[in-house]
Length: 571
Image (cartoon, rainbow, N blue to C red; front, side, top):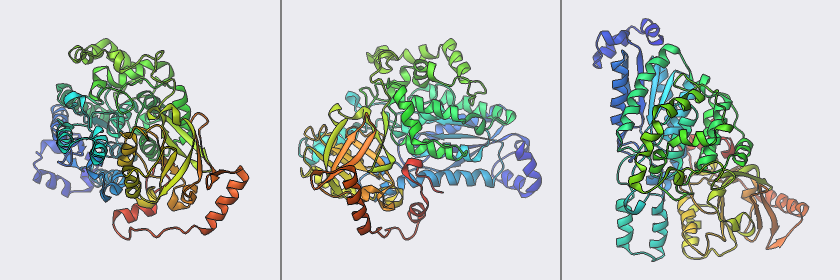
């Protein structure tokens, strides 16, 4: 065991651990770090110490010694609407770095990693890949829906309605009071839920463990089992690099397509792969989403709250539907292949245990997870668009877009920050047929914040939802619905074509053809050659803006981050 070798090199280690409450006997046991994002920062992390306790029990009862470490996360919801959102994406990289420091500074034989939410789950997965130490991930579960199936992503809509005087303050406060009835990831297929699913789909979490409702005893049971399994990983020396193969990432992208997962996964999966020296080009996402149908009827693209996903069989049930496409021979954290895991679940009564909850909800499993031959859509949720506006690509979640915007030409309305764009939408300055541009919001511009409130303001306006698109080098919430195109690369701060767009330019969106192009100026269509000449003249006049960040973590991040289409990680 690595921990025993290092004890000989650091004679103070034993004394310091004894001073921390370890026994003499503990020193010679397999030593397992239990790293979690527990903290009172938000509902996704406030309950995690209960899972830490169960993981500890599983480790200690099987002859190991658990050591608990913490790096809590911030909440994208709490960071919305102010400059705090600029810190969201960089927090992923800083959390991963802090976990790296914990493990590298102190000897451990394996790790258990516990988190729930938007940045903490990808941070943990990046750290697992970077450290390449035997490790298992425990997803932190999902909260219940509120009254009348209220879920948090609806608050953005109600906020816009309140500001437009469409609902009363009393109604608005009632929605806010009831949107988060307990702990866990928010109850829709946002980034938090998507990344829990990705952890299981990659093979790093126990089969069936993603998005368990937090009020269920199953979540604690899985946490204890994961702690027990960490001892086996230490003995077997099964490393993340044995699990996180190109085929495992392809499996995860296939599941992502079937669940209509968050567009932010196109930042996180490439960043995780990068830690292992693997490349996940955006074209791979597009290729897989073209062939894997969208099956999951869960918000924001579908109807039901996220809590219902596990009741319908969770990730294993989705995998069973797309089984013919998956790489079933990949190894997983169980020590078995994906095929063996699915067979074990089928024979163990797992699906019956999940689905026994559905009759009281008045829902059938097939209402939630559609069969492969009766999909919600024949293609997955994500498309990668390219053209003279986005030479390196842009991301659109077309499962949440009206068919009227699949092929359309719009007129550019340009804003250099979200606050101005949001005000224009709420004040009815944006009209049908406009393409709302929000730029200088990429990783190097401002840390790549979400454009959630502007998308909700558009999506909640019946006059705009089918007639207006939002285009940005920033990103979107996993809860985003409606006409949103993000991650436009190269970003404006790098001098990408999005920096050259002017009011009155004609913007062609063709999602079936995967095109995003500037096709005219001053309201008049131009030939491709004419448009190229116009953009070249504008480029000569463009000046790179001076960064607002002179010190601190955003200064570091904006200087060192890569393109959104590569994952937005720091080099």
